[in-house]
Length: 517
Image (cartoon, rainbow, N blue to C red; front, side, top):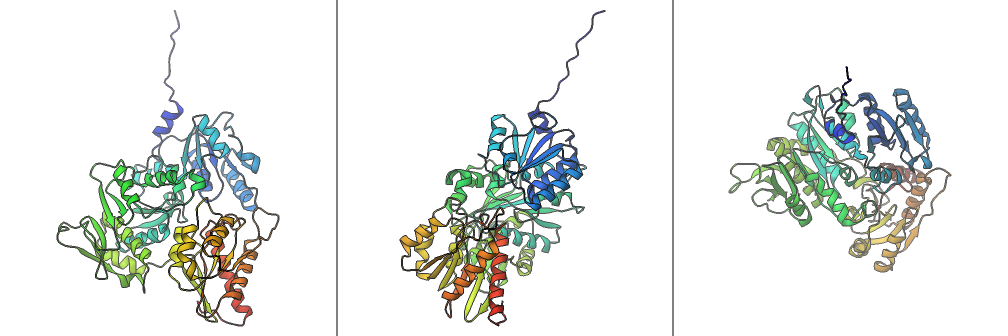
């Protein structure tokens, strides 16, 4: 009797990945390389191991922290963890074969050698946010709705305000993403969240493919991260991904046409609305400001002739600058799209406490005010800080990310008493100062080398603060608003800001003063 050949339909890697849209899907044996062992990469690797995937983690660092993270991942079941510069130059095998998937941490550039190798091999690349979106359903129940927030500046403030408004409405809500808490960690917490306020960077959006938030906003755009995205156009294209597949409301900045064009070009869910925010009087389908009140003409039935009061400018604190008002309006539009009542918007703004490192008063000593704005990682953010003060000793510089400084310096040259330059290479900023503020004294701070991955950031900042103190006079503000990223000399903008705060307090202590924060 002749034998019969049985053909089995074995799904391709692409077909299998397409089926992975919940925690309950079959992740077992999936071969995954995780790029990066920082906060996002660790959370992705730990989650995938829990799901039963075969995981190899790679990272260019060999720091003590990276080695400790690697030891933990090996204990919980990682197939391997490869550290050091050589580890990131090629695509490793998993279970003796090329991976089915690469999950990358957001900081890894698309042209990085290992990611480029994966691209050439037609291997799918997801970010940790894409992975989190696919895992949002567990035991048949969706973990939380998403409200997505991005923009060049103001993301963290807006996501914090949105979180506060949602919580004031009685919802179980948390700010996640680029704000500090990885979305994967929130999904795995034993808490039944109603909604996530999700802060996403352009890096995270670049590696996200299938997100479908309830509402989304691009707060603003300005030249930033050009080195990572390859061009300003590439940066804008990745920011615009925030609007794709939005379900109810695409919120945009009425005072910046680029964000409106993003909404016009977005492929959204049928019935999704375009809603603008403005710091001026709002038209229909906008939120804005009238007679010192934040008002809504978008989410009320009688919006053609009326507006609903959301809050007052006083609820934002004394003399809130325009960009803070804009952030509050954007947050209000998002939560209103989600169904939050006006009274909860007001309570949320009253309860909101701004985080550290964003135009944060640190001390007032000898008539000099010291302000920490380490969060100003690009010229657009630094401009908002500089415009808030009259006479400034400016501590600036760092990793420039390929941006230009001419407009920032030319517009603020009259405010500058002196400039203290930090950063391994602040030549672009120095050149702009020479062109547009030639009479302003500039004092470069040499890096303090340690033999480790980064120079001694604390020592650099202590020198910068000491120099600033020498040149600040009564009535001046010493403003640390670097207009650059921090990673050349610090672990993060928070590390840089904390170093500034510590140096200022140490300076006051040596002078025998108690700084008035």
